Length: 411
Image (cartoon, rainbow, N blue to C red; front, side, top):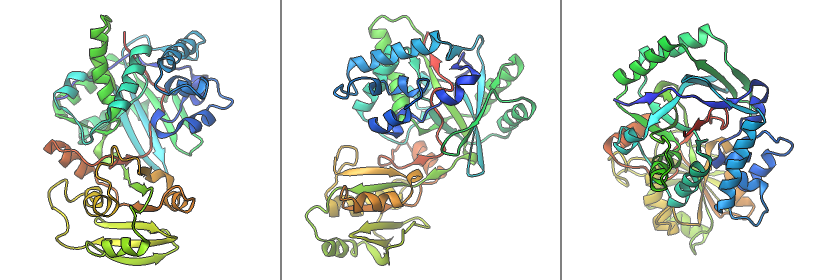
């Protein structure tokens, strides 16, 4: 069974909460992050993306960036923007998007559980992104990025969480500019804290990384970094929010490709006809309505692609649409062998809408775009349980937790 613990969160004073709360550091580029903080000295992006306060020539991975992050964190604390809870607590984080609600438990999870496979992965990580967050954790002595974990829902846990929400008022309750409502409750009575700890220990054999593979890997590896540098800190646990599977929603995660690999539009369509039934849709955006159905935007038109029978494997990995896209389109037609390393491909989360795909192509930035049907939560569980991994950028979870509302200090 998994091990979770309450913790003393570093969090905003109530009057600063809406100003501090920021989108996760990894869902925007440097220019977008810089725009986000305009006129807001309290944005947590000053800590998670501290390069925005340095000269444009500063490399995002330069040591000065991490030192600046640590300085900014100390400044937020000294100015009273952030304070640390005086006792170990759990926290309940509820998000409401388009009328759909999901509530998760914010806690710290065991690095040993991660290393031993009780916190299950479904994606590979990239060393450069791992090292970025390892350096950030090492210099700030804080885990500022929340790892979004899923678990197979348990009635007794659902009841404990809902009862607390109904009987208490949230410490934060606001709607962000993107329309998503964020509410946070502090669970601070010893009795209920113990009930939650025991309920997870008795009923949850594993958790699954939904969003935050790099944050989890970095948290685990930063413990080794502290030890190697004789830093006497407790880095055995890391910041997580655990959501029951029956409340989660996975969106599509789409692709755009830089060029046609030397082919003409006619040649691309001819090659695709070997593995797919290809239909011209026209100018209207095409959104796949079921598995093994794809949209393609090419040369000003949308096409519907449907996989032909016996053109893909039926094992848990082979049956995924992201795998079919790789095996039957990206590699054989466009020459993309590894989506993690090929600079000719980019990924567009479903939250941006399918028009974003057409815009990227029409602008000349990209040559072709593909829309996919979302992976299901059961597929994620099945693949994680089998010890396999999905192709990169297979799942996009919405809504996103805001950074800065709850931070774990390594002490």
